Length: 402
Image (tube, rainbow, N blue to C red; front, side, top):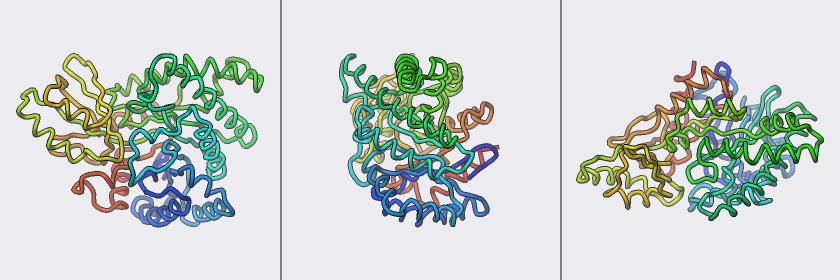
């Protein structure tokens, strides 16, 4: 839905289902009621998640035509996709496999190009459209400087094929489409500094060469084309877990000419670690309900000197709880955005408010997408009904927008 100069939606990766039939069934089941709750009189936006399987299925027969007719009938529109999870994302062990296949593979490239061809047919006239994606790969799959460089080079080659595809679409239709890289803990691109370095050391140098050779674009124009079509997905939970200063990040991206494709509005868990080690058992008991087997819940701790310590998953952190000198933990566990505390635990809700405030003053993106995908694995007392919870999140965000 449009509110002032931004478009607000929720990401349908909340709903389980990998085929197009299951995806469409979920949209028909939930979206009309959520729209009735939060946007009864205006058009309602959908942040669409299509698995690889669903993207192939949507292009069979008249499925895409049927979907476009349904969107029109229901007064809905699509302006953003979540293209990060390639395959199964619910009711199975996902963990680090959410990055598979990564950006070194032709499968990831083909999937992403297919998503853009679909988005180009769904995007309302006059809007830009984006697809969020993996931060290249999972960091711990690769060891040594040479291995990391090889990943970045091959990923760049594939990303630049996407750039050329989107440049041709713009030349043909006028549509501005962008791929939004989503930094996250233990991704190869984990924070703002690593994103900036990747642009400066890899994407732009290689991009100017490739776009000159393939399209004859001079260096300055080639760099602008790369930055037009490769952007950042600003997942607030992920940047908060990394203890990023949002104002400094926004300013740094602006200096480098790196655009933000969308803000994913999401909250992480955080907890203060008591100095009294006897009280740490209470923290452990509070965190144990969040230990679950589906997703990775990376933890980053910070001590009084500001030193950060990373743990690949919540159980790894809990093993170190008794003896850590961390004063705070932030946990990559998406929790409802409308709640700021859970007993001993807190959320990073204040980071959301800061990012929304910055976007209001700097207007660095018009795309806002609520992304709390963990409803099925949250402790039972933290949610009610799915459509009620989604509506409540959207209403909370609406109340924080001008």
